[in-house]
Image 1: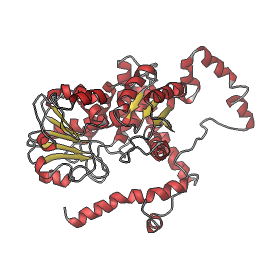
Image 2: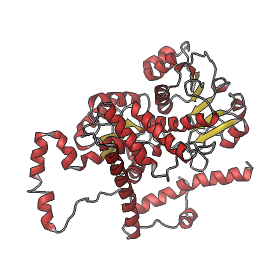
Image 3: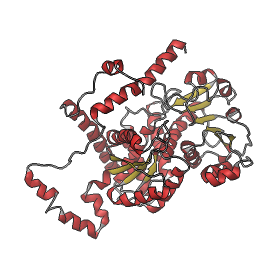
Image 4: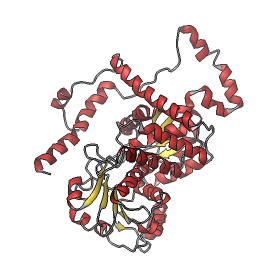
Length: 460
């Protein structure tokens, strides 16, 4: 790729950030609450509010599960964050995290038909965080944890799963793990390799790759052939700082003990040598992964370079070095590994069966559904995972998760496959159509012209 082409790509990558401040200010936020019931005249409020509302209240008092039938709880998800690990911004606080959580909420609605609410909370204490989740549980059908620093995020997820009887999901862990597995399933088919036989180098040992390793193992990867690299090098059972890791991050310690039975030592270069697969979720590049390191990977290598906004290695460099399949986290290259392919549909599925939890097995079920959808369309080196605009994948994925919930005995209701499919399609279609109609009616205004915004852009 020429220098001019690279510069054009970089300018394209900067454009959303230049438009975002003006557009956010124009709309004064991205969400609103609207009624879903008919309001024919003012008399209807005697039904929706007092005195009529007392009747469903009494019914729910006798049976709390009726809250899923008489209220919208069945479709409510709380997006909860303390703002300590926001995107690539780090610890920016709960107020500054709100734009991200609002964005997440509109993805939930548009792609999954889920009514999600951003709740950015002013505490860094994991116990207070968990107490907050317990306090709000009666209002929600599920909770999406978002942008929480590690290792606290692991503890909060594990404890919340134990304490609450609704699905609790951490998208930075389970969401990334799901879409990564989906892409890898098909990438391995393209290169003719099996998940239980390949050596996988995982660059970065944060939330994405720690949970990713667990989900890969659940899907059949050999723990001994997984080699993880953190900021200090390859994890292994004889590292000098292992006791310190054990105290500060027992989840990483556990992986240090389980993985790397091939005995590798060193850093990224050594981890990649001879590896079949590279899954990088570390820090923005380029240059974090060097071209010459990819050249020493196994034949028909697979490289997932998922850092944003710039991948650890440019895709064309990985290809020139011999990689057969390359994926990134960006939409302007083939094979985007995008969490938005996962969480909206997974929550659609678990909400539709009123599940009591969401499990890692559901991540695997969702990943297989994503992979099957792409395979049915025809996979290739440049198409291993569906694209966001292929909306039909979301009902398919939702049904897979709902059926897995039923199989694992955590579903409160057990609709048939056909009923689940029809419900998911209806919910997702209606969400997309309602947005379209609001824009056509002028109730959602068009934003200012891009040229006008870019002309007046000031760097932030």
